[in-house]
Image 1 (cartoon, helix red, strand yellow):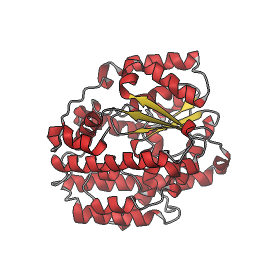
Image 2 (cartoon, rainbow, N blue to C red):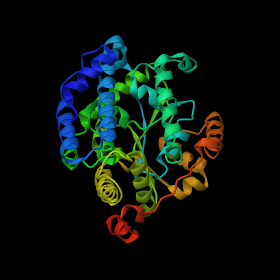
Image 3 (tube, rainbow, N blue to C red):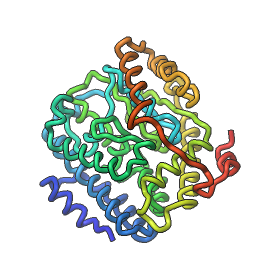
Length: 372
């Protein structure tokens, strides 16, 4: 069984820091650990992986607390008109996010800085940074041992990633229930107010973006759908970009992604169990988002259809800039065109095969949930 005391002790040993800030995160951590023990049927490998995930969250939390003390000016950094990309998983959010962050006027959240929060060092120094080298080495090993995952979701320490990695400091993320059968934690999470977690999320962005305060943040995470009201409470001038795709394809794809990511971790979370869990989760998330969206200014939302994005990525990007009320600069267009070309070749070229039937689902069952 995962021990919360041992998690903290291990995080202290790794960082040399014992200040984890206010104790609000402990409620969720206790619920999650108990849910793993009672419901997840973790294998030895699964328990080892989940322990590492939770230890990493505590390490990042302690590092943020120390970095805020070391950089008191972070609180003066303004975050204006950020872009949040969201939608059902596997609807083009990752590709759109990475194109938007190719604009030199924008910044995204690089994966290694979610693990080691700090003011972003100059890019030219990263390869010589021992922390970056360690984290990059971990992802290279992951790709070596799990090559099939690269076709589903390419990851690199230097690449912009989902910002749920910051929400894990508050132990609030649907990512946990995407990778394990933990209904008690799921029930607890759906009853929470996400606003404090997003307030901490913002403080981390202020810290990380200190050297680039003039650049606009572009953030992405499908699970933002569960927290729209909190996002707009913390970031009231945010532009919300929602991606759309046939739910039959999206649900099959996210089931495949999460089943591949968690393979061998549990004796119950596989096949049809993954299908039921993901169908329930994302049906609820989309319904909640649609209800919350209706309460806010329509001008703060831009919709991007997956088929339109695949057919003409730059036209879809231009619709986002239109929502912001700013032009797409020649420099940004050139950078985006180069990135798009790169994404279609080599190790980052999409190579994902999946079927609803692999997860005990049918097209009719998905359409019944998602309707039109």
